[in-house]
Amino acid sequence: MSISSILVPAVLFFALGMFACIIKSDLKFPPDMHKMIVIYLLVGIGLHGGKALSEASMSSAIPAVMAALLLGFGLPIVAYLIMRFLGRIDPMNSAAIAAHYGSVSAGTYMTAVAFLNGISVDYEAYPVIMLAIMESPAIIIGLILAGYSRRILAAQQSSIGGPAVAAVEGDGHQKGMLKHLVIESFTNGSILLLFGSMAIGSIINETNMHKIEPFFDTIFMGALCLFLLDMGMEAGKRIYEFKDVGIFLVIFGVIMPIIGATAGILIGHFWLQYSIGGVTLVTVLAASCSYIAVPPAMRLAVPEANPSFYLTLSLGLTFPFNVLVGIPIYYGAAQWLAYNY
Image 1 (cartoon, rainbow, N blue to C red):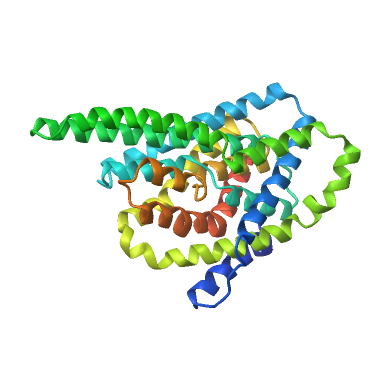
Image 2 (tube, one colour):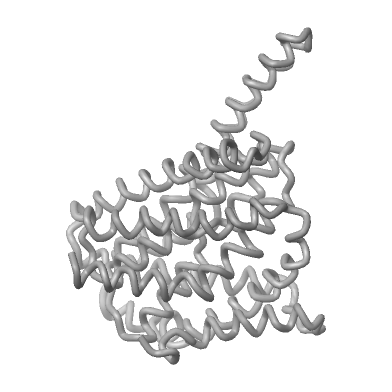
């Protein structure tokens, strides 16, 4: 794989954004432009995914749904155990951070799509279903872990004469919060756009699809470049916050995506039996980390956690790692696995 295939324009614009922030340039996006670009990209992904799904058997999508649920529920637990028993991170911060690493990054997925398109590699449509599904399980697990941690702390307080009533009230509050956030995660704007656009793409006919393709196809990669330019500037702002998160969490921010990628590549190749491109996308989903939907959910549900920890890790470390380094490595690993197994 040549250097030119790795240095796709989207990745280069991300690097430009980081560089602009590091040198303290006055470059910045107009207000709300980021949201407009995200909406456009999500609709574009959904339409193309829906079109591809309309040509496939829906029964063949069931394994992708099961894989998404397995990764969405399993990876946060792995992340939590690593932080608690290896890093000795306090339980509330561990729960909040773990939720981010079971969820997904649409930006990382879109960059992977751009990478595969740049080297003319085909891929299945099913990973876009996994993208839409994996957000919610991680939030649920994060809340369960936070609730479990609160009960443990309450039990410890009561054993030394602390207030036990707060534990009962906190438990009831946690159940109400869980219900609220589960509903909110399924009505989240990003999820709604993905599912809605997929539905539209699957039911409109070829003639109507051709009418909108110039807008959602021809300029898609240009919009992605602008999105990653903005994300590069956001990631650059987090570089200066690494001193606050500690060396273990910095190491965790690189190791955890590799652990997720390992699970993703094995599931994509041996269970789902996708092509090299499809396995790459499943691997990217498992390696990614949410920086849009999960942070506000954790800030609401786990106020005891420090937002600078999970925001710095997700946006300042794991996202740049995946975009600049991870995606080519995941593709190379999927290629090696396809040729050897």
